[in-house]
Each structure stands twice: as structure tokens, then as C-alpha cells.
Image 1 (cartoon, rainbow, N blue to C red):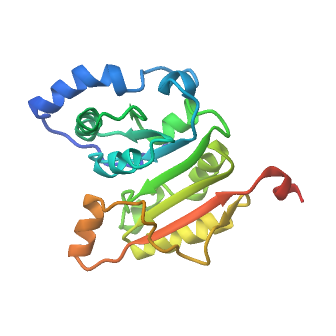
Image 2 (cartoon, rainbow, N blue to C red):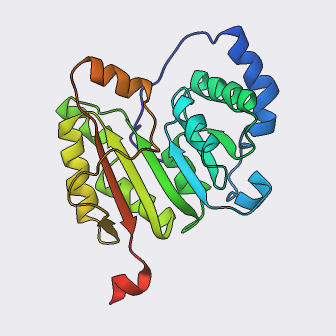
Amino acid sequence: MTDTRTYKTRRGRMRAGRADAMASLFPRYGVPEGVEPLDWSALFGRRAPLVLEIGSGMGEATVAMAGADQGRDYLAVEVHTAGVANLLGLVEAAGLSNVRVAHADAVELLQIRVPTASVDTIHIFFPDPWPKPRHHKRRLVRAERVRLLVDRLRPNGVLHCATDWLSYACEMLEVLGAAPDLENVHSGFASRPSHRPDTRFEQRAQAAGRDSYDLVFRRVARDRVSA
């Protein structure tokens, strides 16, 4: 289990429509609770490259990407119930068969249920920046958590992060650049990829005058690491 949460707990009642979505749609699109390693073929009903979306929020960006990329499967992981419920409704409305949703702490899911070297791409878009210095230990992209992320990627798998906090972006660049099994696909920050849609967080950042920063790193194949 993770010792330090990377998210803020939210309280409040869920809208009736979202509660209905959890009841009716989670059995169809959700990841069943358990501690056993996940079998991607059984979960999606096929063999396809897997994208792990950490912190899918309300799900609009996940559905947009998965709908335009139906040759790959998307596992969206979100800890907040309202976001999970909203995403379930969007998946159903879009008629997507390549999205599954895990209602979980992403770090715990990675530690317990995601097999080593089984994920082709990991997306971490606009994670909580925890801007106060005393809270930086809660940031998701830190050295001890990056080791876990890299371990779950296949060789040549891609880790794509984005943030609108420059200090966090610089920390990400330093931490990811220091990981021995990762290489930066670009020189420094990446240009914004066309496949990454705007998120609500990014729209708020733009309104506040903050730029966004993308980082794209690749897991180096084992024979290249040992060379």
C-alpha cells in the first residue's frame, strides 16, 4: 500500500444520475475489486496495446482519445466516485468497447494488480501539483513512484505527462531524466501532441494565464540498458 496519498479526499453527495451510472454501468465497464493481477485480454475481451490513464477526472479527455484510437485499449483509473460515474456515462453514450474504468488509488492498483511490463503507454495528465513545498512529497511523479511506473511499462513503452505548473514540470523533467530505464523522446519538453485533448484543468490554467508542459519519455529496452 502507498504511505502518502497523491490525491485529495472529496466529500459530498453524488448526483442521482451518477449514482445510477455506478449501479448500472460499472458492472459492464468497471474493473471488479480484488487483489489478483489483472488479465487484460479477459478484461477487454481481446488482445490489444494498453493505455493506462492515471487520474482520468470527469473522463472527457479519455473518451475523446479512446474514441479516436480504437485499436488500443484504455484503462482509466480515477479515485473520485463522481469522475468514475461521469466517465461511465460518457463511455456508454459513445458506444466504446475499448475503455474500462478502475475506481481506485492508481498507486495501489499499480502495486498490487498491474503486472510487470504489461502496459504500452501511461498517461498522467494534469495531476494534482500540490504547490506548497511541504506537500511536494504527495506529488505523483517522484523518483520512488517513477520506478513503479517504469516497471509496469513494456520495453519501448511510453510515459506521457502533462502539467500547467512550471515548477512541477521542471521537477518532472529532472526526475524522469534521472530514471535509468527512461529516455526523453524530445530535447526537454515536448510539443503538445495533437492527440491530447484539452482538459478542464488545462482550460482553467489557460484562463489563469498558465502554459502547459508535456513530457514524453520511453522505457529503454533491456538489451539497450545492459549495453
